[in-house]
Image (cartoon, rainbow, N blue to C red; front, top):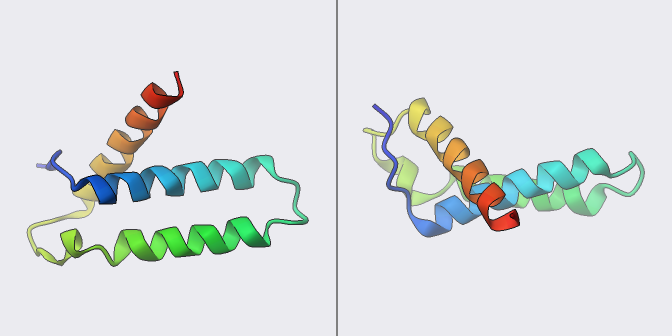
Length: 78
């Protein structure tokens, strides 16, 4: 079963990944270098986070993190 207690910094990193993906989707093809580099940076932070070193964490935890981040981002945007 997926856990729902994630460190705040991990959750905020996932929110920034979602926001950067959205910004890339809105941007015309030219001029996306800054956004692509920001996305790579955020993804590195996300997947290298110490939270994932525990072998008890599974892919379901990552899915739950994404779901929670989307929910929180929508609430903050409203």
